[in-house]
Length: 268
Image 1 (spheres, rainbow, N blue to C red):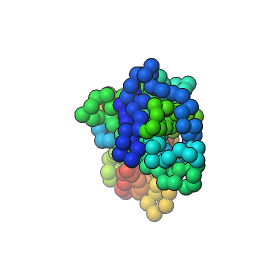
Image 2: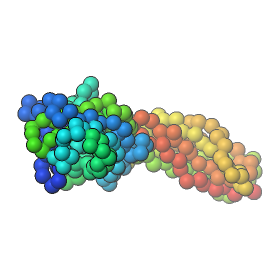
Image 3: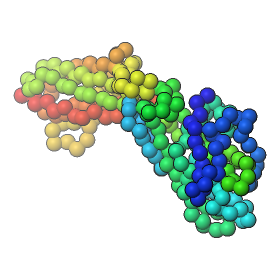
Image 4: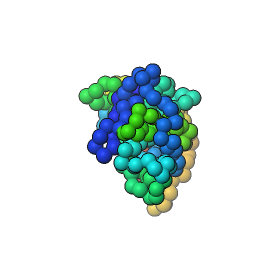
């Protein structure tokens, strides 16, 4: 289990450190009877992380609380988790560095936002992502009361995909080429490896070869081929008209979609 060490803060005071302590020491009672709703991470889009740079995304959510609970004593935090339930004993748990910031909508409702950091490489190896963590994550949240040890966890607030960033290249040759002759289109599909902080070829993946005739406004798919064991792409077409070739990868649960830059070929 990899749990990021986190502290929730409310009004500058420590409200909760449940994520930083063993499960046996963390209170998981109903506590302040806080519930969460309308959690949206990264505006509902997939979270795409490259090989080294930290990616920070925003989260928004609503907190429902008892009217008598002072919002200034409440710390809240959205989390990503894997496993059947959310809590200190979740199989995997990710969250941001700081507690959410909330505004009072009514005596019982708070509108909140928070930042969540994803680090493929950092000065603290405990915060590093590993490649096996790419894929589907569940969304949840946790709340702590500054005036008590009570902790409230809530899961099943949605899902998101944490994806390894993909890169894709295209090279069509020869340039120029005579009409009717063969054009060879090569390329490579790679994706971020969070274990080595590099990009490595993505093997046996379907990739579309597309062509846009000079003067046209859109591409047309010519064929679909698969990458080699090293992520390489290679196929041939017959030269018919001036235009641009490109490769397009639709993406997977673990890896982002990507479209290469078009490569123009002059057909004579």
